[in-house]
Image (cartoon, rainbow, N blue to C red; front, side, top):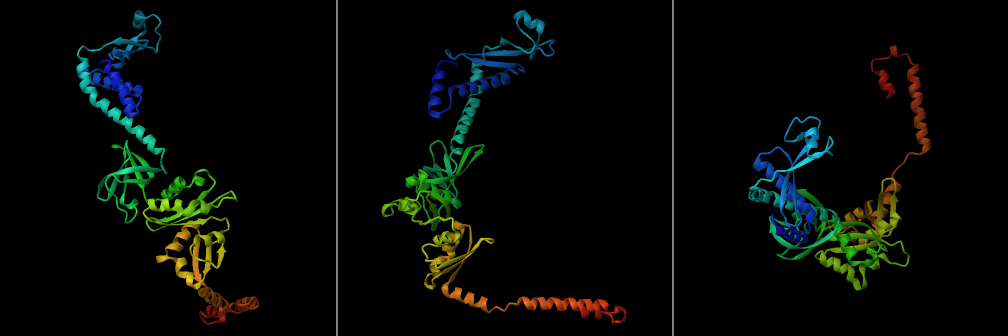
Length: 393
């Protein structure tokens, strides 16, 4: 080992972000492995690397015991005190055992171990970096495509965008820069695996945080999001400050803020509605752009009956039920939508449904009791077989 070793370690530290101390520990461990492998030694050894010259020494370590049973790993207290009278039981003695030709063998044997340890250290740093960024947006460029999967270059590693996490109909070109949402970071034998998504509702939330300063500052809150990627998204916003319009803040002047998000998502439509703690008002807002006449809520079943004008029914339900479906996801309520005509027919049907009065119910119960008592007073032995059951019926 030469002094140039430390220059190389400092360069690696700058380029890879791995501290020189970790690298030295890695090299020392590699040299211990090389020593035991090439010289067939079962000794406990320690390797010391001189920080100035880069030269190394191998020391045999033996534990001080009352009476040695293994001369390779132990030394008796009496023998140890011949070297140094201060030794006590439990201490370790050191004796240099550096082989003459160890330099060449060590360089060959330790090279792969050192490279592997460096790779592992680098992977660990990359994993720690990206695991702390889960649920955040990351910007990268398309590196390659294979069987529908997109590999995004993030600099120190690459992210994986699976076909199921891609916006339907969206195409990607080589070196194209795209924003994606970090869903999960996994440790694998080949290094950290960063899984990203373009369909996750969290992507919309993070994009609005980037575009709307009021959200970043906490003046506007995103309470819920429902999304069908590539088609439509509904987002419910709220502001604890009375003088701030949460919807207007997200839309921006002339719609510039929401349009930036729409462009990033490839033209996906976005409905921004005001969140309310009143379920009826919240549900009414969620069905935007449809006009709502009334909302009847059932707190126990967490369901709501919504009445809209006849000409607004198709708009409220949406194409293939999308608007109603997204509104239900956004609010967390089961929503039944009826037109005014359907609602009137529904009320008329309820009004015409015959119901037993309380008096009729009481009378029926009294008759049943009297019949049962009469049967019990009769001599059942004088009756034909099965007649008792018929009378009870």
